[in-house]
Image (cartoon, rainbow, N blue to C red; front, side, top):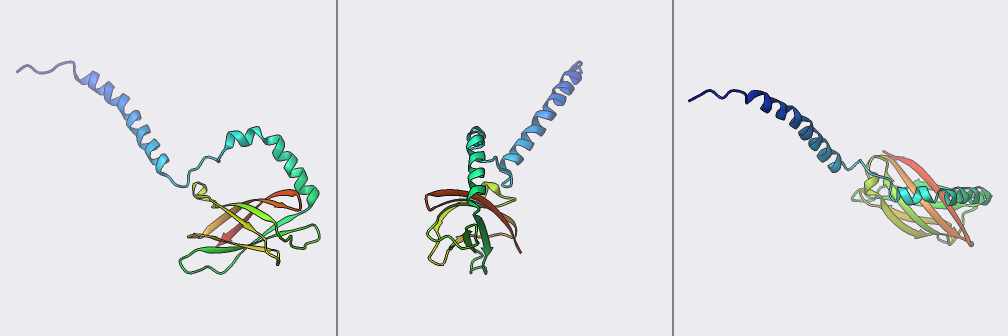
Length: 159
């Protein structure tokens, strides 16, 4: 048998070219599986609606309303009840307000929960976030009451 000459360098170059392809494939696979990675939902539509968002911010300032979120004692099974109050400029709770909520852990934006509630005669709405984990949580709220729309965000820590 004759020794194979001239095959080492072409195979060496092919291996050099294959290494980044394999490495990139591994990185893409790991990034796609990572639950803490999330693209902001509807980011393009939200970008186009920037002027409307700034108009809503001015409306929020004009109303003077505030959103108060208070985590309550954890229920069995690890779920976390939240007491949500919408307060007017004088600090009084707004009754009968319709709430559209998005609740998520800061490290798991992809696992956001969409909830809805209505404030009671006492001015509070209670919602339950299933399987609440420890760490920093956030809530984005859209409130409709008294023919007005108010938006707000809130954050809290879960021990």
